[in-house]
Image 1: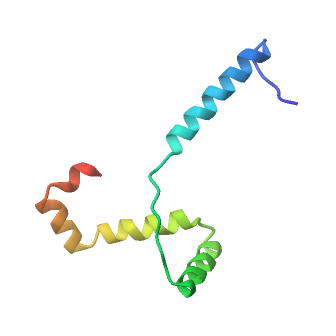
Image 2: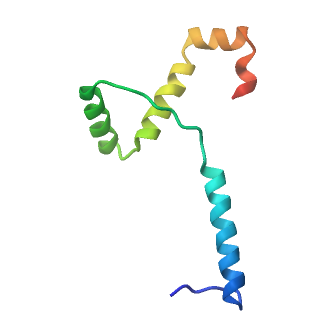
Length: 85
């Protein structure tokens, strides 16, 4: 049974629906598809679990570190890509 501060259930349901749509819109991020060797896949999944992280967290961390490499930072600066972050 759902407890709601609103007097009418219809109003409550509408508010809950709007809130869930806002949460979904805020969480929506672009997706990437990557292919890795089976051994690497197994290792990444086990390490992610041991660190209590999702695969998305692991990949995001790795890509952020890759972007931060000096050679990529030089390209970002050269082509004025820092506006995209």
